[in-house]
Image (cartoon, rainbow, N blue to C red):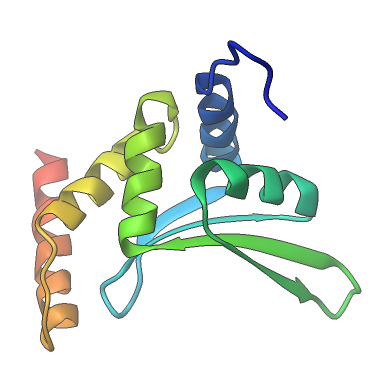
Length: 128
């Protein structure tokens, strides 16, 4: 339970720090924005999920190591990135590009093809 007068920016900064270190922001092969955080600490990911939402998937590898992944897709990922953008350091630029991508998001059956063109244009713009 949060204390009276609690500042939620503390939670946003914590989540952003974790995304900077353990997170991944990308456009998948189908052209959907994804935000993922992978870690062995389930409680930590549950805490972050309580701040930004998302679903947690658990997988046990052959070496008996359990890994958890917090996943947010499309508009949920965009909302989380908008919320945390001001706190991101390492992934700040990626978050901005992802938000731009969602703003300009292409819809329809030729989405993957158009996403490839959009990605190439962003890469070209970034190199300027």
